[in-house]
Length: 291
Image (cartoon, rainbow, N blue to C red; front, side, top):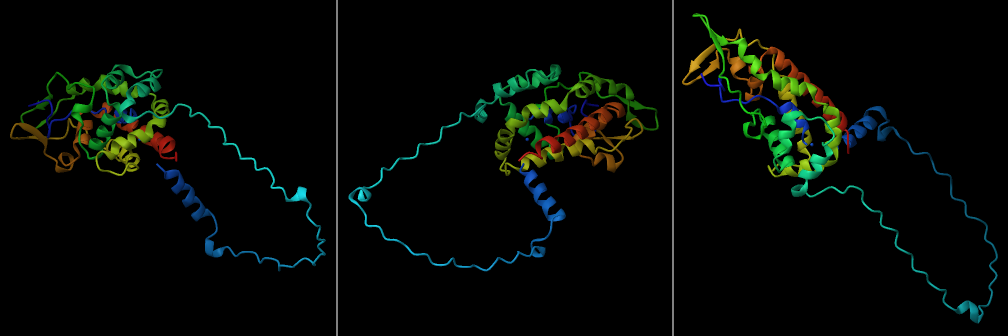
């Protein structure tokens, strides 16, 4: 059996953390508008107060004074001065020049070895947008993750009556789960928030509206967080060609990213799902609530 069984070849999931390396809409406007619509009076219920009748002032006598020669001279016209131009602090870089600014923004935050490896190659924002795109479709973005596949093969247990995943194989993902658990997602998101327009720009390269990037992040994180709790040591496997698949169609029919989470084992999967929940809540609070 290959490492990536059951199903399509898989890669350990670091999407919950890689997403926050994104390193993202105008949702705040919609929220404010909704609050006014729900809590405030309807425009039809607002009756304008009647305006008082217009009363013309009594006519006054106007004294005509002959103009003197001095009064006929044209007044001096003073051209208004242009307002001073305020310097722009920390202007947003061009997308193709954003790698170093992103690294600088995250430079003081403990990212661990995996996080640092993600930041070394170029095109950080473009890679992150691609990672979000693939994950939101349910795929595992193998080539975009800074983690090598486990060297040890996928472990199975065969008691003569059934084949299931061997619990000893879960330990291969312990270090990854520990790294995810150590990340300060709130600080990372705040540091990347100024670059959100660049993430949206990179997202638009897929032919998607730039503002849809914000919701794609939520979709990708929700896929991970909503992975069902399944003890794969009790889920029977059957051989299909050269790979093992789950006998239960409700498990085999899950998105590839969700089956990868299950392959990490119940304890590690719980960590990944918890961090995905945390990331999603922070994203809604810090990013999607920002105009």
